[in-house]
Image (cartoon, rainbow over the protein chains, first blue to last red):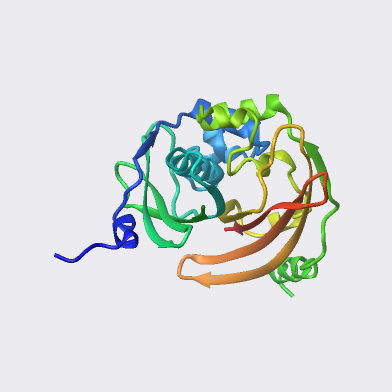
Length: 133
Length: 139
């Protein structure tokens, strides 16, 4: 049995899952806190008029959820250096938003993660994130 | 010349032109409301800003209203944050944004307009604390 290197061990590491429960109320709260008052996030009639199923989550709210997944996991062990997300689908309030992630690369004191959000009906939507300690 | 072509051309003329800088101080109350809104009760966010906070701090006005002549709605395509230094309560941050690229893509379901913007955030000591790149899409 060969010894497994630290890199290989870390590459198998999953981040503890974080499940968020966004509501329309939270979207209004977030709209106020960010200052993004685009109506697709709180006005059902407007959202439907632009061919959406109803109000949808702010992409940056989903990014904040994934940021929390990472900062909860990271604690005071290091600093986030770079964080990249792509919004590959729409998500609606009233459904759990499951944040998941794993370590994909360890190089010295630099760590790269892959994180993504899932809803109960959709396939995984991957978002990327890199961080270095 | 069609309307959509001229919108794209007018927006392309803005590439690289910096918008007027906007300045804001990181306030404890705003930070608290933001942390509550994202549902993150990490005590660290009482004094330091969480990863996506800067978009809420100093919204950059890129005067892209005329892009609304194109399509019928905005979508956020993605964001990339780079962090160089922690931002804390009391810091005064200046955000300067610019349009980095504008292009149109035509696919099976119609045309989309992509506007790539970049924002630099500089603190009261003159140090760049973060950089944001974003993709706004008109569909």
